[in-house]
Image 1 (cartoon, rainbow, N blue to C red):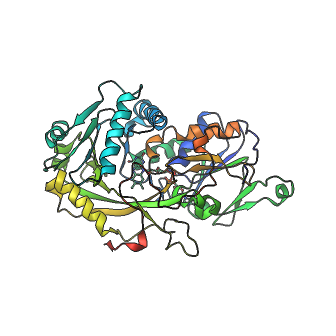
Image 2: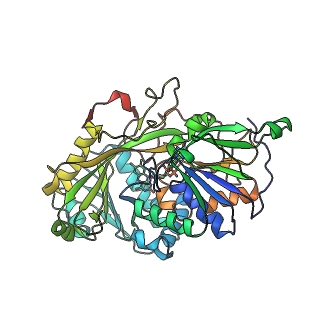
Image 3: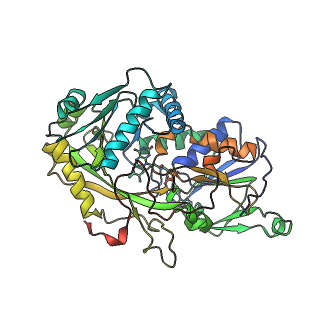
Length: 443
Ligand SMILES: Cc1cc2nc3c(=O)[nH]c(=O)nc-3n(C[C@H](O)[C@H](O)[C@H](O)COP(=O)(O)OP(=O)(O)OC[C@H]3O[C@@H](n4cnc5c(N)ncnc54)[C@H](O)[C@@H]3O)c2cc1C
């Protein structure tokens, strides 16, 4: 479908952001920074961060290690903002980032690491000397002395110019900041968008009707510009987006450690074994600093949920938050193998707070930030492809640019009619895509 020309929106007009997750509240921040006053955010969660947000997590990797210099440049800007912004810097930890493959890694993982090293060393904005080659397990131990396992065959690199963000606390902090700036939030059933309805009046005046957003409390919301930032849930509200956005999930779990163990592991870089999974230094998740968790995530091609999405082949997350603490058996096995290899003292501990984290893959891992064809003033901001949390401080600026220009100039971020069949061969993902219904989960 040809894109319908959109009139640039002038500063000061009303904006409605549907979805107050990572991208949604980043947009609210950037619109507010640019002087927009009438900003409303809808989210189906009872609080921000919402239980349905991929960003509602203990921590996320912040790295500029991309094969593609375009994303590396943006990620370097994001790291700068994480480190210097008064809003974001309290939640960023510049620990460094170790990337390795184990002795059983497929060629795809090892060749991806080689290409990353070339990309990092040739990027003009990567700090000099940030990259060290890891050829053997002793090199790993030199960079990460906290690791006590055999690290069988581990090789790769260490990048000192990277780290991680405390994800849920950063989202919460920005939410509080936005409330203080006068941004309006409707949460729960008052914020749950259930339909996009074309306005009858503007529908008569071709080419495009204005959209209304209907919420679960039966209210209708409209604004000069409406931005959909619904993450993995986008195609539930906008089925046309399902052709380019595929909801996929990965398994997350946590190991509880004592305050003493946390002190021993303090400052540990993020460790990412490309064929097993990744983990972070322990962080305290309670105010009294008694409860410390190591977050771990299993690698793989991701799980779709097509067969569970009734009457459709589009992959969507389950409509309600997972309450059974279940992850696929093979993912728990991967996480345990990762622990045996790297931190064997924790390999037999229970995995707590297990959940499937849902995000949105596109066929080429490119974001989608563009006007939605067929409507006037409706923008889609999504297709995060599992790598957008690091961009949290800056993502909203790209969306504000599109709103103000009235078009997306960056071809790679345009609305795509093309397909994402969920089986796409993404260069940095190791493992095939499965449907969640095909695997056994363990409680
Ligand atoms: C396992 C895993 C690990 C990851 N690790 C990293 C990492 O280390 N580094 C990194 O940069 N990125 C990482 N990501 C990716 C990152 O989490 C996402 O890119 C990012 O959170 C996507 O933001 P979003 O705003 O598109 O979606 P979300 O943050 O999920 O926000 C969507 C929002 O829409 C709301 N919503 C849904 N339906 C409705 C509705 N009908 N009405 C109103 N509101 C609704 C939800 O409540 C939610 O708040 C990871 C993702 C996964 C799955």
